[in-house]
Amino acid sequence: MSRILKSVDYEVFGRVQGVCFRMYTEDKARKVGVVGWVKNTRQGTVTGQVQGPEEKVNEMKAWLTSVGSPSSRIDRTNFSNEKEISKLEFSGFITRY
Image 1 (spheres, rainbow, N blue to C red):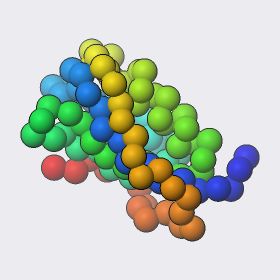
Image 2 (image 1 turned 120 degrees about the horizontal axis):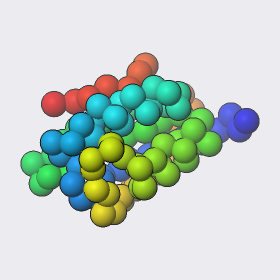
Image 3 (image 1 turned 45 degrees about the horizontal axis):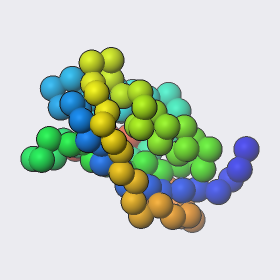
């Protein structure tokens, strides 16, 4: 297990609103063991940030790219601002409104 902590921002495009995408993202993040947040945008996408050990962040990135909620359709996921961090900036994973 690497002890490198990573932070990455994400935006998911496709049919990701009205399909419980945020709830499933929050649930998956808690199971994986990462912290951060998720929210809907006015543009019809879902955006957020994930922080945690590198391999757990990578697991979350894979989920955000290809799995999502059962009735969602992910067309593409953009990741940005990926960087190493010295400590987690969040205590849990939440949905923002």
